[in-house]
Amino acid sequence: MFASAPNFLVCVAFSLFRTSSAVGTPFGLAAGTTGGGSATPAVPSSLAQLTTWLSDSTARVILLDKIYDFTSNDGTTTGTICKPWTCSPNPQFAIDANSWCEKEQPNAAKSKATYPVAGTKPLVVGSNKTLLGKGSSGGIKGKGLKITGAHNIIIQNIKITDINAQYVWGGDALQIDGGSNIWVDSNYVATSAIMFQHIGRQMVVTGYGAVTKTTFSNNVFNGDSTYSATCNGCHYWVALFTGAGDQITFALNYLYKTSGRGPHVGGSSGKFQNVHVYNNYFVSVAGHAVDPEVGSKILLEGNYFNAVTTPALSGAGQTYIPTTAAQTAACSALLGRACVANVLLSSGSLQAGTDAGTLNGFTAATFKSASIKAAAAVPSYVQAHAGVGIVN
Ligand SMILES: *[C@@H]1O[C@H](CO)[C@@H](O)[C@H](O)[C@H]1NC(C)=O
Image (tube, rainbow, N blue to C red):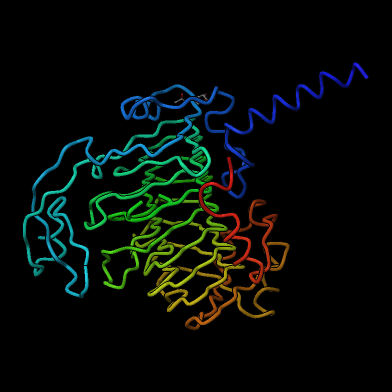
């Protein structure tokens, strides 16, 4: 009997510890990611301390127990904006960053606007960090996160919201330009808020540096917005993966009221990306979801599209999108398992992607052994598990 007592104590200590460190185990390509590991979780006492802790070279578990509001942190600026979208009501405007208006939208009407600088200066995230929200109350407002060539990062259970929602180029929620072992899980981004709502531009975006061993899972991408590029209350700029060699798992996410880039993969010649998009729940997408552009290989399986105008564009990328029994079975030769069919409800037709060459990009063990649910199980699972307040 005495011998079992210490074991009992160890278990209690372990479960207490688990309430403050990353919850669950990274899966998909981010398997093995540890973030700040066993560092003692700590709550930053100020915006400045959060900024330092995220960017320094110490392994940390940073616990957010409230919204850190950076909106006024860097003051305001007045500059040129243009109006590339002439729809109504409430089109987004574009900040003339790097002369984008002159270069890309020379005919767009111009004016001046005053807006917070914070959104355009993201928080730098270094290697070996866990950024974890407590309950449903942790998050960052007015500023996003930027990872540049850093490794071993977990971002879990936080909200990222309200980053210059009216302005494209007003800020991204999460940018990653090069990096590996990154797990972005159970967050809530909204254009007004990562994980994502009320964001000016991208909810998530990769640059040209390779982003590998990375998983986006259980996140809510809430596109419900006042301002949009499509003037339909749905955010266009959801997920954009363009790195030279991106290797990404995108699974079990909830995309709601978006209108584009869900995700957009590829688009630059000579750059290649492999993205495994599975068991996501797409709801009320008034536009398109998957956008496969040149250089991309996308395996799209077991997703559920509910009221999605265009589930996938037929772009220049390579896709494998099984919708029939013969197409799911055809995966066996390269993956050693059947693929899982996608399901549509009240949605536009999903053109089957049958480019078998796509599957050559998914022969690694991670893809072969992926545990993929039947699409019919996805709506209830994702609604119960995605977003903040469910873990930790
Ligand atoms: C991250 O942790 C690993 C393993 O402890 C270490 O080798 C590496 O130097 C750390 N990186 C930074 C930037 O501190």
